[in-house]
Length: 223
Picture 1 (cartoon, rainbow, N blue to C red):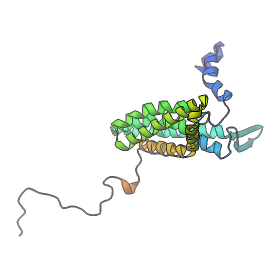
Picture 2 (picture 1 turned 30 degrees about the horizontal axis):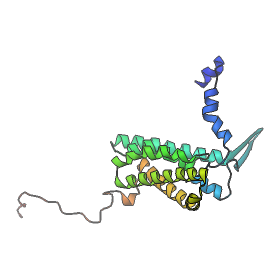
Picture 3 (picture 1 turned 90 degrees about the vertical axis):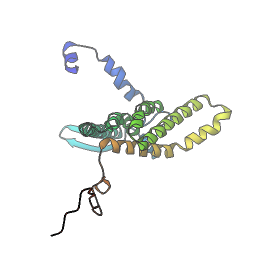
């Protein structure tokens, strides 16, 4: 598509406005109030364009910024979700739903330049956890509550009524703790998406004793 557009003189305005404009217009780790990794990094003094690695290959200068490091981290996690989805589909495991929807949660948890409202999508699609198990269902409700809290915080800050100043301070104060909680929930969700199990906790992998078999037939006679 890009090659044909370049050869025929087509317009890429749809790509520039729809995909590139936001990354250039908001050069911040997070916007408004977000409970994610970028929020914690910003609180620690990091910025979106900080250089993590620099390399020189002849006349080519390579700089890895925090923005691109988070993007690569996200893409790697999505690739693992694809592998997990294939494994679950092969095993006819309902956790294939978790592997399909996990990228929506990983997007908000790992990437920079997120708005608070973006977690709504992850909260909605994570409802598939209700058909998998109770633990992931609880995570869905926690993610939904966190998404609601962020949006409420932004709406209260927008108005700043005297009656809501205390609530604004509380929501601002819990941001780092809520960020850690959301990251833990997303990590647990991601772990189920991968389908990996620690060998010591695999069901039936370790047996301390062998139970005697139950036989309903007559016992063999001794010689």
